[in-house]
Length: 387
Image (cartoon, rainbow, N blue to C red):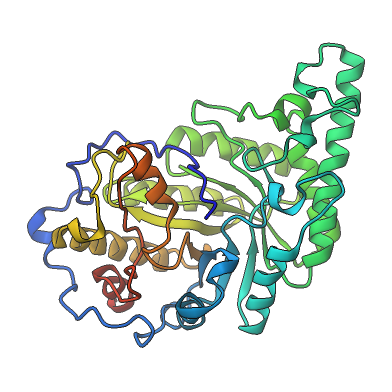
């Protein structure tokens, strides 16, 4: 599987702080988690439970479009997104040579099962082939000192952005409902991420990507700027200021994607609510695009070595966290159109890679509401039953 270690999650919490903020061990035990761990394939459907509020999505690899994973998708989800195969390096590994084989599999599955499709992601600083940033002579554009040549390089790169977005959007415009047009353009340390995109074009790559997606996707295409840690005030505010500036220039941004790779005790619910309301006040839609609730703080050290080592009280704490989250999402459902989990069950998550990286190659996370054996977890009962 191609699960990249995407980013550190900013948090001052130690691993010991496993419970959500303001919650004691005793209160964790009071959540509605005593129901049986039945098969998820016969449990009440998540998408039906939230059909009046927002669609429920999952990130998938093409290998998960058959067997039990496919059955899970059909039962509990009405939206789907590619975990990796629609990223630039997979779609256009060589200039002008587009590879849609794996992406087409996901689109076909979604259409056959009446699911919405999110596209992730048109432009990203990671999982992008090097050729984008090489000039016609094969030299790195970022190393160019000559101002005349730098301007030529900028025009070339923006043309490549336009062609990449145009080709993909034209192909899937009748199938994809929501597009992550640019991903992770805000730096954790403040301001715009100093990616090759930015160093060569400034913010023009963002403008060209959105304008091209709108031109070829049509008025019905929903275009999102997607990022992580959008709950953190400084990063949130930098994203907000960027969007305000782009909107004032007429850039067609329709919404904000909040990745929501979060933890049991971080961020606070108030931070999450404030962020959603902030962008909604600009007239933008909000989507929760990559939801998982890690059992660990940052860094994830130490980690449970196996799934069986995870204590029952930790799963109860996770259930309490999910319960509070989905109550908030429902409260704000006029501002949120989709909630997508970054996986289907605990048997496949990028967080395992992260736990292993910080624990000598050994570590297991369990971020979702379904366990590795396709059974429901306490977190499932918490979000299916809450009122």
